[in-house]
Image (cartoon, rainbow, N blue to C red; front, side, top):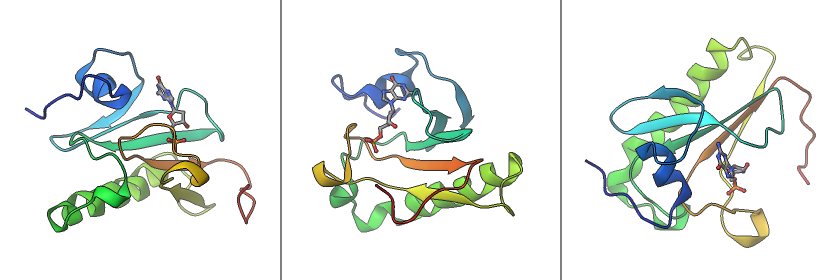
Length: 118
Ligand code: DGP
Protein backbone atom coordinates (compact mmCIF):
# COMPACT_ATOMS: atom_id res chain seq x y z
CA UNK A 1 0.00 0.00 0.00
CA UNK A 2 1.22 3.50 -0.82
CA UNK A 3 2.21 5.40 2.34
CA UNK A 4 -0.09 8.29 3.22
CA UNK A 5 1.56 11.59 4.00
CA UNK A 6 -0.42 12.72 6.99
CA UNK A 7 -0.32 16.40 6.07
CA UNK A 8 -1.19 15.87 2.38
CA UNK A 9 -4.76 16.60 1.29
CA UNK A 10 -4.56 14.46 -1.85
CA UNK A 11 -3.10 11.49 0.06
CA UNK A 12 -6.15 11.80 2.34
CA UNK A 13 -8.57 11.86 -0.61
CA UNK A 14 -6.82 8.84 -2.11
CA UNK A 15 -7.06 7.03 1.24
CA UNK A 16 -10.76 7.90 1.56
CA UNK A 17 -10.15 10.01 4.67
CA UNK A 18 -11.40 13.15 2.90
CA UNK A 19 -14.36 12.88 0.53
CA UNK A 20 -13.82 13.27 -3.18
CA UNK A 21 -15.85 12.60 -6.31
CA UNK A 22 -13.72 9.89 -7.83
CA UNK A 23 -14.11 9.32 -11.56
CA UNK A 24 -11.34 6.74 -12.06
CA UNK A 25 -8.94 4.69 -9.99
CA UNK A 26 -6.49 1.87 -10.50
CA UNK A 27 -3.44 0.58 -8.65
CA UNK A 28 -1.32 3.66 -9.38
CA UNK A 29 -3.67 6.60 -10.18
CA UNK A 30 -6.82 8.20 -8.77
CA UNK A 31 -8.80 10.87 -10.67
CA UNK A 32 -11.41 13.03 -8.96
CA UNK A 33 -13.40 16.19 -9.64
CA UNK A 34 -11.78 19.48 -8.66
CA UNK A 35 -13.67 21.02 -5.73
CA UNK A 36 -13.51 24.42 -7.45
CA UNK A 37 -14.09 23.62 -11.12
CA UNK A 38 -12.76 26.10 -13.66
CA UNK A 39 -14.54 24.45 -16.60
CA UNK A 40 -17.55 22.13 -17.05
CA UNK A 41 -15.13 19.21 -16.84
CA UNK A 42 -12.32 19.75 -14.32
CA UNK A 43 -10.69 16.58 -13.10
CA UNK A 44 -7.46 16.13 -11.16
CA UNK A 45 -5.39 13.11 -12.15
CA UNK A 46 -3.27 12.14 -9.17
CA UNK A 47 -0.72 9.36 -8.61
CA UNK A 48 -1.15 7.29 -5.45
CA UNK A 49 2.57 7.85 -4.88
CA UNK A 50 3.23 11.06 -2.97
CA UNK A 51 5.43 13.22 -5.21
CA UNK A 52 5.44 16.89 -4.10
CA UNK A 53 6.08 18.52 -7.48
CA UNK A 54 7.43 17.85 -10.95
CA UNK A 55 10.83 18.86 -9.55
CA UNK A 56 10.80 15.64 -7.53
CA UNK A 57 10.21 13.22 -10.42
CA UNK A 58 12.76 10.46 -10.93
CA UNK A 59 13.29 8.26 -14.02
CA UNK A 60 11.27 5.48 -12.39
CA UNK A 61 8.22 7.78 -12.52
CA UNK A 62 8.29 8.08 -16.32
CA UNK A 63 5.75 5.31 -16.84
CA UNK A 64 3.48 6.72 -14.15
CA UNK A 65 3.47 10.19 -15.70
CA UNK A 66 2.83 8.68 -19.12
CA UNK A 67 -0.15 6.82 -17.70
CA UNK A 68 -1.48 10.05 -16.17
CA UNK A 69 -1.31 11.83 -19.52
CA UNK A 70 -2.94 8.92 -21.34
CA UNK A 71 -5.68 8.81 -18.72
CA UNK A 72 -6.36 12.52 -19.34
CA UNK A 73 -6.88 11.78 -23.04
CA UNK A 74 -9.07 8.82 -22.21
CA UNK A 75 -11.27 10.79 -19.76
CA UNK A 76 -11.57 13.64 -22.28
CA UNK A 77 -12.79 11.13 -24.82
CA UNK A 78 -15.15 9.46 -22.33
CA UNK A 79 -16.76 12.86 -21.65
CA UNK A 80 -17.00 13.73 -25.34
CA UNK A 81 -14.38 16.49 -25.44
CA UNK A 82 -11.55 14.80 -27.37
CA UNK A 83 -12.49 16.46 -30.67
CA UNK A 84 -13.65 19.85 -29.32
CA UNK A 85 -10.47 20.16 -27.28
CA UNK A 86 -9.24 20.09 -23.73
CA UNK A 87 -6.34 21.36 -21.67
CA UNK A 88 -3.92 19.47 -19.41
CA UNK A 89 -1.83 21.39 -16.89
CA UNK A 90 0.69 20.67 -14.15
CA UNK A 91 1.29 23.73 -11.96
CA UNK A 92 4.69 23.76 -10.27
CA UNK A 93 5.52 25.96 -7.28
CA UNK A 94 4.51 29.47 -6.36
CA UNK A 95 4.47 31.54 -9.52
CA UNK A 96 2.54 28.84 -11.36
CA UNK A 97 -0.04 28.71 -8.58
CA UNK A 98 0.60 25.24 -7.18
CA UNK A 99 -1.34 25.02 -3.92
CA UNK A 100 -1.37 21.27 -3.24
CA UNK A 101 2.09 19.71 -3.10
CA UNK A 102 1.24 16.28 -4.45
CA UNK A 103 1.50 16.29 -8.22
CA UNK A 104 -1.75 16.42 -10.14
CA UNK A 105 -2.60 16.84 -13.77
CA UNK A 106 -5.53 19.19 -14.31
CA UNK A 107 -7.89 18.14 -17.12
CA UNK A 108 -10.11 21.03 -18.21
CA UNK A 109 -12.74 20.94 -20.93
CA UNK A 110 -16.16 22.14 -21.96
CA UNK A 111 -15.52 25.81 -22.66
CA UNK A 112 -13.16 27.89 -24.78
CA UNK A 113 -9.90 28.13 -22.84
CA UNK A 114 -7.89 31.29 -23.40
CA UNK A 115 -4.18 31.35 -24.20
CA UNK A 116 -1.91 32.53 -22.73
CA UNK A 117 -3.40 31.49 -19.39
CA UNK A 118 -3.62 34.07 -16.61
P1 DGP B 1 -3.01 23.56 -7.93
O1 DGP B 1 -3.35 25.01 -7.72
O2 DGP B 1 -2.46 23.28 -9.32
O3 DGP B 1 -2.14 23.04 -6.82
O4 DGP B 1 -4.40 22.80 -7.88
C1 DGP B 1 -4.99 22.36 -6.71
C2 DGP B 1 -6.42 22.09 -7.01
O5 DGP B 1 -6.96 21.31 -5.97
C3 DGP B 1 -7.27 23.35 -7.12
O6 DGP B 1 -7.77 23.48 -8.46
C4 DGP B 1 -8.41 23.12 -6.15
C5 DGP B 1 -8.31 21.66 -5.82
N1 DGP B 1 -8.66 21.33 -4.47
C6 DGP B 1 -8.26 21.96 -3.33
N2 DGP B 1 -8.78 21.37 -2.26
C7 DGP B 1 -9.55 20.33 -2.73
C8 DGP B 1 -10.35 19.35 -2.09
O7 DGP B 1 -10.47 19.26 -0.85
N3 DGP B 1 -10.98 18.46 -2.90
C9 DGP B 1 -10.86 18.51 -4.26
N4 DGP B 1 -11.55 17.61 -4.96
N5 DGP B 1 -10.12 19.42 -4.89
C10 DGP B 1 -9.46 20.32 -4.13
